[in-house]
Length: 264
Image (cartoon, rainbow, N blue to C red):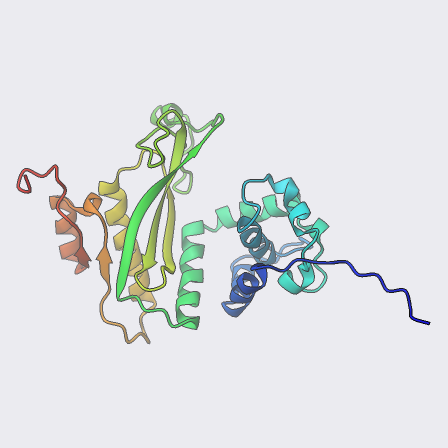
């Protein structure tokens, strides 16, 4: 007589590939090594991987719904032995986000990108740099008026949610911005920095190029690549920026903006 066996179906989909990449570059282990060991049941690194997986299919839901996303997923296969869907609650993820903020997300991203580039042998011959905006709704205590009056405590990692030029044509909404640099081949991200909602490309693009140039030099002891060429739109082009980049020995490609008298 056959035994009565019941099965619970679980969906892996594309998440197995993503989790495998995170494991190969040692994402969770590297993040856990950047801070003192916490008493969280799920470590900062593992919780971060969970949020990466969640962001590829459930990104517009609130944090307290993340356990719902993992209910029908093989959680232990994706995140490690002993991890349960209910462990990935908003308290766990909220504490993880606080810890990532404390350690500067731009610095952490740079370390992860360097590991990934070396593991997968991604070249840095040409790097594309640009900014984009993200519209948001709601009220924010640290708005542009408070910051201009000095009523918000100075914090380099704190970005201003405010009105600015909107790439998605929502001038009615406040926004924040993001500077991102990717490789020409494969579009692998190498640099990330959140920015105030009213940031100017004239200032942010050149700052991103300088920061990434320093970052790549720091990790180039055993690189065989030629010097990096940075590619950006006309927001990079100005007399002051050309002087800064020339003085730093940075190679770059851009275009002259149509507003230039010389171009006209």
